[in-house]
Image: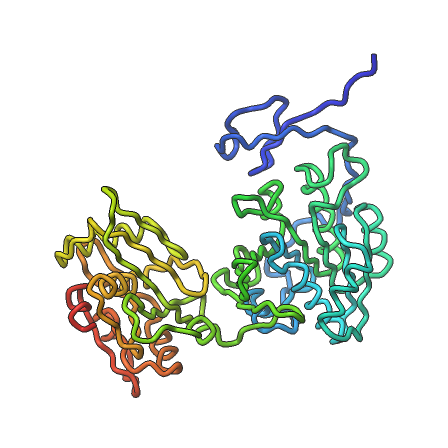
Length: 451
C-alpha cells in the first residue's frame, strides 16, 4: 500500500505549526484557527553570502531618504506616506468588487505614463479581460507589461528577466509554488509565495503591490503572518453599491497609519475626492430635526460628516436601538447619560442613528454631535444649518477636550459654518479665529441650551 502524504496543522493567525489539531493555539491563544496542510518538499531558500550576514555598526550604515515614486493620486500618496518606496512590499485588501484591481491598474497607468517600467501579473483574469477594463480608463502610453500566470516559479523568472520597477500581483491567493503540495490560497502557499516576493523586492529594489482577498470577518484571507511580512497594509472600505471608497493604511513602516484617501467610483474608474468634507455634506436636508454636523480627524485631515438621529415612540415593551456607521454600544451609553444628566426619558422610544455617507466613525469627538442630534429629534427642534458641534462626552455629562481643535474649526470656517460649539477647554488653547463664533461648553446641559 502506498504511504499517504504527511500533513501538519497551521494556525491561520500566527503560523504556529503542530503535528495534530488543537482547539486553542499555544502561540496566539486564538480558538479554532488550526487548518490542515499537506507537507511537500522543502522550498529552496535563497542563501545570502557570509559577507552580507556580518554584523555592522549602526554608525557605519548610510541611510538616506529614498526618492519616493508618485502614484498619480495625491490621496493614495498621502496614505502611503508620500509615495511608493522602492523595494517596498504593500498588501491591498478589501471586499470583492470594491475596486482593488481597478485602482492598481490606474496606478500602473499613471506610473507607466510617467516613464516607469511596470509589470502587472494577474492570476484571476485573462489578458483580454484586463484590456477591456483598461479601455475605460483612458490611453496607456507607457511601458506596461501584462502577464496572466499563477505559477510562482514562472513569475520569478519573468521578473528577473524584465527587471521592472513596479510589480502588481493580483491576487496572492491564486499564486502557487509547485514544490508545495497544498492548493493555491492555503496557509503554506500564501506564506511561501509572499516570502519569495519579499526577497525579490528587497534584493532587487522592486516595489511590489499584492492584492489580498478578505474573509467574511473583514480581514485578509490566509495566515495573519502575511500582514507581518509586508511593509504596508492598505484596506479598501465602503459599500460597493455606493459611489465613494475609502482606502486606509492599517500598517505602514514608511509613514503614518492614521491617514485615509477618499475616492469616487465612476464609469471611467476611481477618481480621487480632494475635498471629502464637501462631498460628505452634499445633499443635507433643510429644516430637519435630528441632524447635526461634526468635524472629525483622520490623521492630519479634518473631515465634516453629518450625524442623523431619529427618535420615535415604541409600540413594544423593549425599545429598539440601531446604529449605522458608529458604535452601537456608544449610542446606548450616550442615551443613558442624557437620561441621567438632563432628565430626558428615552426609555419608551426607539432610537436610530446614522452617519450620512456610509462612513464608519469611532472617534470620541463624535459624541457631542450624537447627543445633540438625539435631543434635536426627541424635542423636534432644528439645529441651525451653519452650526457645527464636536467634543467627547463623559459619563458625568462633561465635555472633554479633543485633539487638533484648531484644524477642525478652520475646516468648518472654510466650508461656510458661522458657529462652532466645542469643549470650553479647547477654546482656551485656540488662537483668535475671525469669521466664526466659538462657543465653549462644559457639559451637555450647557450644549443643549446653546443649541
